[in-house]
Image (cartoon, rainbow, N blue to C red; front, side, top):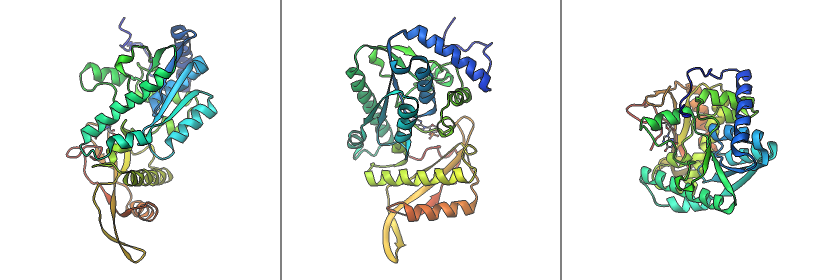
Length: 327
Ligand code: XMP
């Protein structure tokens, strides 16, 4: 039997009871596979790696070593939440790597989007590899591979990882406990493992993170404007019942400035672009009809609370002709 093929008899995990049965089965399987050995995991804080971390903590506790690399492009509060949930609440063995300066230095002056993604992916592997080589006797690498990753890489659509992926040359045995699950099932399992809702039901977030929402050469101040405006947008969507309803929403801060007025003086600052879309498979997308009064309120908050911003724009373009991200 090919272990990368989901058996036709496998029931879709839709209830806490089915999730508990899956968890019990995987805990046994993980223990049988790794015995008393250590397992390494790149923990991004995304749904898949978080669920794998929680499953492994349950199965092998301190034998799991999680590495959380802060590349500087995470959303506001994300690194803190990873530390809180995994180190403080689950008592996981977590190594936090602050690599913010390193990544920002690497991408300084780089304007081409593909080159930016490439640099970030490559640097991520280097940082992870350095951490791994500090630890002795680690023969297992856990990954949050899910079933669509397997299907898509088999069909040649995408290599199944970018940032957060396996350094191929590391030559470790893989532990992939959710590789036969679809995303909705991973979420049900995550909830059953006690992960917080805002981790389990979070919107898709690209591996290179906010870097793809800071088009042109990334600077610290413009990246901060992306992070702060994104936090306001998420807070307002959550307050107004749009979290969990809209598939993906974010802000972008393009690399140009225009004239405005702040405190009765001329200001020459960036615009923030809001994007909110719905899709089933990310191949096409439609724009969410966000209530105008909410957009006005968000505009008011962003222009008053985010340094360096004097305008807010709303992207009305579906995919196609646009893509979901804005770069
Ligand atoms: P696009 O912009 O291609 O996005 O319409 C489709 C979906 O893919 C996500 N996306 C990425 N995810 N690394 C990722 O891990 C990337 O470089 C990347 N670019 C886009 C995007 O957020 C959307 O959900």
